[in-house]
Length: 398
Image (cartoon, rainbow, N blue to C red; front, side, top):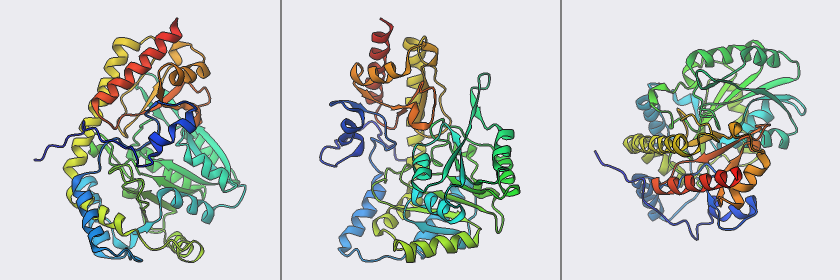
């Protein structure tokens, strides 16, 4: 088996990387080491790069159809071999992006002013979509179980919110960003049934699905779909294979009406129904050749999380609490036990530590006593980030 090196350093200078070139504008300081946005400081696998190069060598990049075996086949192969889920071609559909799909479902199944449920903390683009589409955000905070050290949905509150006349959509995140929660089959089935009983449409964003450790613990909402269910699952390869700048996604549903409505909107309203030829080449290579690569990447991510956990235990345990997440490459670190002022902590991380991590308030963490850190990078870079965090809290403690 080929062994892959995830500690290789690759310069992003001149690539207009949002993580590097966009950090100063967001955090208001120069020279910060960025760990905030969810793309990886790890090269896309060679097999994918080779496939894209081969497609480039053709030299023509005209309008491209996705309705063919070189799209369906790799997608079905991945879900069968990774998750033991058999997909039907009529359930799989290409779309411009995951967030486009979430937004279009919102526009199709809700009216302006309608309530859209989010579990909080929440991926920050969801509230932005709700606001941008003139819908109303309805929050249900996840409950943190101190003994199990896991987050859980308040099912009774969720049921009450779904029963409201004005609530018509629930945006689910599986695995959950930013907490890293993975949802059990029992939890997913209960959520699906509550939504269906109350005529609340359910869309499940599963873009982090390949970062569940072990992969056998991932349960997709796809596995629970029945014909006609008002449920849609959206995902893509942007996170798994670091392809965020090659726009693409796909969705899976057995709801024929929403499929028709989305396809009509893509074709007639927005004219975005053709596929990226480079994205299709990347999907085919990734989903047929890169299973070992993603497995080894998860081992590397797990090692980085273990490093962070050990470092906190040794040097920062009086300030920070951290549970190694069972999914994603995003750490959700609490400094509540420090008793320090949240605004001062986030300011000092920038001004003293010289590190850019995402403050909890971006994810509707009202107390703002968490920060999210991206660990998909080299081991030495994680070590440097930890030293910067330690420097910050030692300064604040004085």
